Length: 259
Image (cartoon, rainbow, N blue to C red; front, side):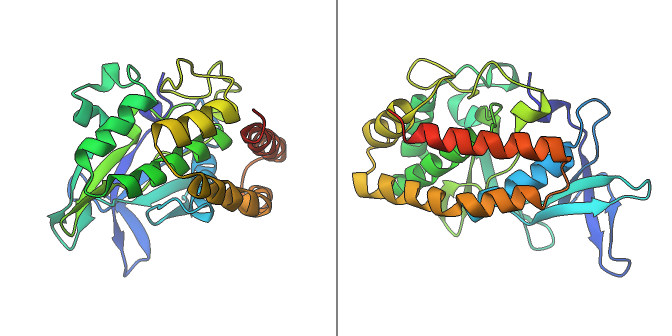
């Protein structure tokens, strides 16, 4: 089941005079995600995870948390497919590129997704490095719901590239645990990943990234690790959830170093 698929979403515009969001039917420039009646603290989780992504170098849109009239927190994100007053950027998610639908968005592999990047992006080598960073980040942060519709390409300034990241959250914590670690199969499996599959196979063999580039990215993650832990500590998550999130990030980073 897709976590994001069950989360309520509202379209909104920013009223600068009142310094508040207004819900609209069309032409919204922001997406608002309020609290879910079953899954606790999804807005807090997504805001934190998106901020963690930005720290590790993943491109993210403007986003944050807002207090609602009932005292709850909602998550907001600015739409990256809009420009100017009425302009739009062309955006296609990986399911569209692969000729699949919402019903078949899990029926794919990371290896095939690499081919989508190579076939559609203007500078595939650059985008494959960005893809590598994003997939590793999702593994580190317990996001086992990154199906094909959660990856997209965008056309900006005549260049087709990976779109800014969206729908990033620790879905494992939301669900109280998960049997899988990735929504899309990699190296014939969806769990129990280590250096062998993520670094040597995915990064070097399939993405064809140079050893120096892979080592540099791992170094960036290692350097960012204390910042990620501090960010979790300062988040709006409940204390128990904070501890679980920190433990997962540390344990999964350690697994990236073990063959």
